[in-house]
Image (cartoon, rainbow, N blue to C red):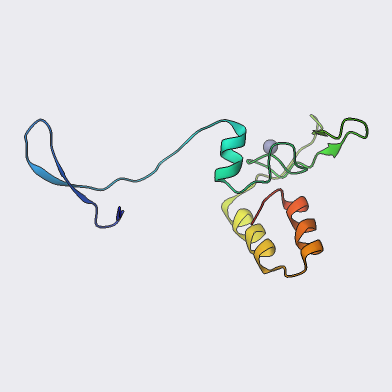
Length: 109
Ligand SMILES: [Zn+2]
């Protein structure tokens, strides 16, 4: 198992000397479905499908797709927001209320 703090033993291919490799994830990317899954978002067609802000979409009555108003000014979704929304979902024991919180936050547990 990779231990980020202690690192792992490696060999420098150029010098053949051993060294401890400590790797840190700085960023990642992917398409919207992959990022939604890795960030525990409920998807790009959810009411709060933006991973950067708290914009709320509206459901089109005929095709049931979610559309987002282009003129809306929204609060940025920060780390604490994400943690607190995750806690709300995890702590909710009533299934109907939990589903409602998932819809409201755009996150899954
Ligand atoms: Zn946004």
